[in-house]
Length: 386
Ligand code: GLA
Image (cartoon, rainbow, N blue to C red):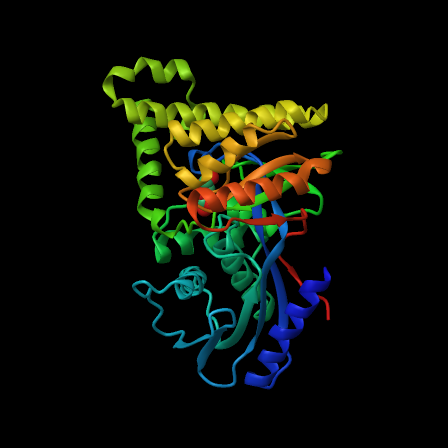
């Protein structure tokens, strides 16, 4: 655990002790990056994410009253509720991730007792680093530990995903919850979203490093756009008589081209091509061919921008600037889109100068700041040893 987390852990723990006067169990649940494979997960396809050393710390313990009290330290908000009547709250923000997880556990016929939580973290919200999956996972993991529910990690991530579908209204795939729960230090996860099984691949980019640049454009308005994209994919898959676009080839799609709109054709084509790119990307790493990997990232961004249409001017600007610089092997937007971060593969020796240049250019163009994050690939959701 890094130094900054020690401070954070102590803060969360001491607020818990102060409010509830009882030693809590502590959980760390990370955010994630995704090297490549965007919007492929809900098409039963492949993705290549990794857990990072930014995350959510959750302190949890049984309550002595019949009510649960949950404190979101970063928002300075306290929420008290009863387990007898769990319902989503319109515009409830973080509360719906919590309530969704509880409801999905209850749906399995599991009876929970009242509990208290204090949580907080260092994942910038709305940055495409999956603070939501980190929160969901930390709650289900915490409840599993506290009440000895005996859930497997796979069961837990499916609960987290359903919470997001049913309580938040985003029909997300499984990538974020998987990466956050199963992350492995220094490894990215080549995940088959159909079997929900992954191969761990060691990431050592030698003289290159991964750098995230946050547009500071929050992507929260994109929920309906996300669900719309998923519906298009499902519609096209149904027309092709397959269960998901993962099973389609470009030729199959050509056969129905005249029966669908050009927009839908391009979106489905993007998914088929992106799925192939993920598989190629894992191959490039076998030979440490960073330049080939970088090219795949640029192609991925191009598809997300022009075919799948989930980018935004700020993301495109950051990727275009990266392209102008030969020290950057590749860059692309990361996550659902419409804001958040780009992921960049940058020569270590050129990083400092590039960051200075891009920060100035971004400020000048959009009259706002971008933020730069160096992340380490880290372990998935776990108990913090005390
Ligand atoms: C969001 C979703 C994921 C995935 C990505 C896009 O992060 O939660 O399931 O679909 O967008 O790749």
